[in-house]
Amino acid sequence: MKTILLACNAGMSTSLLVQKMQKEAQAQGLDVQIKANPLNKALEMIDQADCLLLGPQIAYAKKEAVEAAGDKPVAVIAMVDYGRMNAKKILDDAMKLMGE
Amino acid sequence: MAEDTAEKKSFLDSFAEVSAKIGNQVHLRSLRDAFATVMPIYILAGIAVLINNVVFPLFLTGDALANAQYWGNAVIQGTLNVATIVLAGIIGYCLAKNKRFENAIACVVIGIAALCIMMPQSVNSAAASIQDFTELTYKSTTDKDAEPYTVTREEVESGLAIPEGYEISSVGSSSVSNVFTKTYTGTNGLFGAIIIGLVATTVFIKFSQNEKLRVNLGEGIPPAVADSFNTMIPMLITLAIFGLIAALLHGIWATDLMTLINTCIAAPLKGFVNAGPWFVILVYTLANLLFCLGIHQSTISGVLAEPILTILITENMAMFAAGEPIPADHYMNMQIINTFALIGGSGCTLMLLADTFLFSKNKASKDIAKLALLPGIFNINEPVIYGYPIVYNLPLIIPFVLIPDLFIGLTYALTCAGILAPCVVMVPWTTPVFISGFLAVGGGTAGVVAIIWQVIEFALGMLIYLPFMKVSERAQAKQAELANAEA
Image 1 (tube, helix red, strand yellow):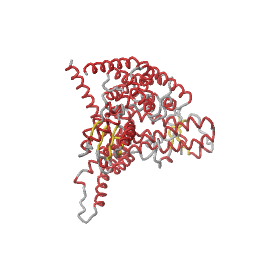
Image 2 (image 1 turned 180 degrees about the horizontal axis):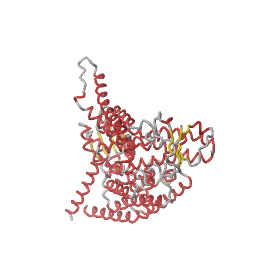
Image 3 (image 1 turned 120 degrees about the vertical axis):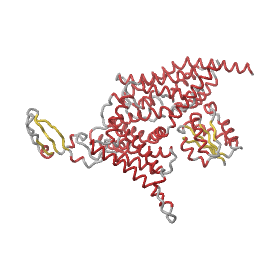
Image 4 (image 1 turned 135 degrees about the horizontal axis):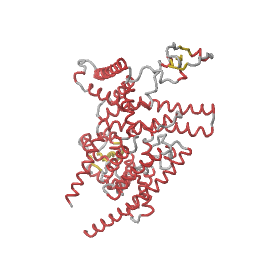
């Protein structure tokens, strides 16, 4: 079971994406769990996650996130993928990040 | 030409970088987090104010109304009237979290304790209402040398007549000395909570990290015991210092820090924000521009404007609940932004979506509009900003930045002109348009006027977005053509 953590400003718009990613993962038969949180909370939960994806609106926080994440992979979601809620692409990228 | 764009890009990049730095400054960020955390109790207070002052009077009068309103007043008592105390604790917590300080709960204690240390210990008679008097002192208005004389409450109530030519010179109110005054626990003290909460927590964290203040109790003592001492000593020092400052202020200048903060910092700041809409327009221009570079607007607006604008709306709520008129220096507040200049999210993109549904022939735009409509109704619009896209799309950046500015200016002007009632209720920013306007001004006839204004805004926004949308679509079509030709 892998856990993907999504972080954005207030956790509002990212939670939208989570639903879509969850559905996509189910459709592909992947054993992953996806959670959305505001950045601070996400950084606290980093120990329970396998990778951290930042919404593009907080791309500036990547450095801080990388430091807090230790050896866990951190990436910023591409603006277009985020805006169009391209769950498949984002999920595929995340799986690659985790080396799956 | 290529060099030109490179230079432009680097300017935008450094703008984004500076903004992110401001937004990430630890104290400012903690302030933004604190207000986001405390928001639910303000919203709750808003609901109570609305029900008490708008709904109950519709079908109740006299004693029945007063009894029903006890409910709302109780909720206000537990939310607005302690807002300062709650905020001081939350600021301590958020600062501790953002500084990655382990003992966040100790910082909550520090924030609240330091704040209360700085509160006045007695209420001066001027602050008490005249109904609370225990004695009245009269002096002659005609004869300056005449002895003033004092009557007690019992004497006044038993119908003692005051000789002509005398007026009340002071109101004695010894009965209010033994209370914890809500003068500064409610919305009036929020500035104090911010300053004292941030300073006290910072000082406490500094002391806690000081190795010299650590106690070494030796091997046999359980670590938890040592830890408790290591919290206690810095806490004691921090609070003792604040107590000393309070004593000095009282002893030398007969004042207290809360009063000083309110007169020297809060009042000028409120005046500055309300000296026309310019400051707020400037902040939101920069903030919305920042969103067009892909970074969330609250990075700037959340730290530069929102704390003070939020304080103004909470004060309006308290005044509205007490049946007082809203003064002109409270016309500009958070609700002007959230209700009238953020329709469908930053940049009022709900109007762009409406244009897209009605006038666009571009399939990609229509698809994204469908996806973005539902969140857009609740003022969440990241799909529009990143997917439409607005980011790095010059034709749409222009209306995205200009429309909110225009709406802030016009709404403020209409409020000053007396056409639109000042906002008195804090409505969640996710409240859909039209409902939000009706509630924000306190419902009733004023609410209907607010809805009409939002309808006009909506039409105006659609009109402004339309030509820019056309230009954007033409540019996109051209790009697609070029891409096809290359391929």
